[in-house]
Amino acid sequence: MANMNMLQAINNALDIAMAEDEKVICFGEDVGFFGGVFRATSHLQEKYGKARCFNTPLVEQGIIGFANGLAAQGSVPVAEIQFADYIFPAFDQIVNETAKFRYRSGDLFNVGGLTIRAPYGGGISGGHYHSQSPEAYFAHTPGLKVVVPRNPYQAKGLLLSAIRDPDPVLFFEPKRLYRASTGEVPEEDYQLPIGEAEVTREGTDVTLLGWGAQMEVIERAVELAEKEGISCEVIDLRSILPWDEDSVVESVLKTGRLVITHEAPLTGGFAGEIAATIQERCFLYLEAPIARVTGLDTPFPLTLEKEYLPDHLKIFEAIKASVAF
Image (spheres, rainbow, N blue to C red):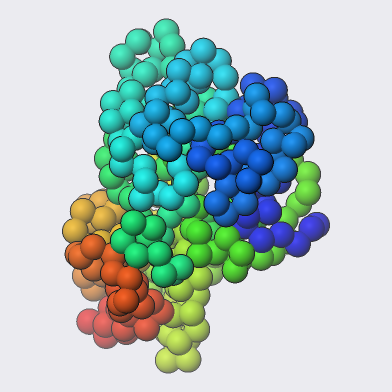
């Protein structure tokens, strides 16, 4: 297997998808010759031509409206939103058009071939316009799938699954791991299932749940917890919509405790939905209140980024509080 960082794995997945199916088209701001602001689409225009990998105007609503039209006519568009923070001008197109195409037509037409890629999250000193985690806004919308990989192996396998999925998929990429996360990635074609969580570590005392960039942070917290004799079970959700309720329930029935972490603010964050569901299904088995370790209910601050982010020390404190409850 080749050793790749996350950007290389994403680029490799796009290359495979475009080589296999001429209907796959990549477009967005600066994705052509420039290869995108992070270079995720490097060399794709050289290889497949300007008709299949090209720049768009700086109009996110137009990018997704155009993508909806292409997908409705049978193309397989992979639209890039340069930063997840820029996705909000396209919010109407995504939640009122993309998500509802199939429903409103009684399945006479749909935009199931559409994938929307967007780098999300903090850790790059990007300030409040380049650091947000908007996954919860879209998890409220039936008709979409929302996927977040944690490493290069997942990024390639999940992106190929997203491109080939019969439903429209939002693919949020943790940009602070683009070059920081490296690992072995098969060079051949493979897919990972959307909607299935992965238990990355088994334990007995407390369940830790996260996705994307927070998985690396969780691992550092687990190292501290194990020095205190606390056995942690770790679950990477991987898919926010649909999310794997059964795997989380099975773990919490064993450990009796749950700590959920995400970068997005606390109020209205997807951790609240998970907590409500697990409380309903595991109430009599819980040994402590479900804990949420998240970003703050403030705009994302530039100079106080480290204080804002839910780091390993905050998660470690939540673990200890849960076990000692």
